[in-house]
Length: 182
Image (cartoon, rainbow, N blue to C red; front, top):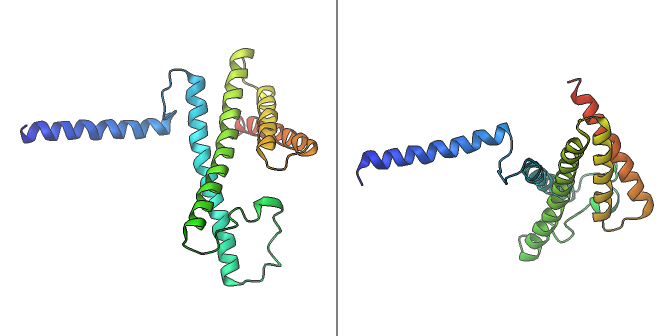
């Protein structure tokens, strides 16, 4: 193989990678053969990454707070399991700490990805079924997504499920209505 064909092949690979990365900004990173599947997968991947970052940053915050022994009286209390998701991760570098961090980060990523995938898929499906994209589709998709998130919680009860459904519907409807303004 001569150097010109090697350079040509390298440029072709480089251009196709750049084309894929540019395509990610314009729409779906995946082509699964159907717009619904593309939207669900794309939303899941993006939100799962955000969920992982959120879980790690929350734990880093509490680790620094504990490590510096700062007065946490001015810090708002975070209730339940959200306060310290990595109970075995206390600045140690042992295997148990790493396993706890990976497990809990994965769980948080899955929850965020699940929410985004369900929301996106339901919005798309309702739009296709009803023939219009409006606040009603967003409200229903948000309510169902809220229920799904509540059910993935370790300590879900009837009141929490209803609250999550109402909150999901309200946030989704507001996002839909505000999207037209901004």
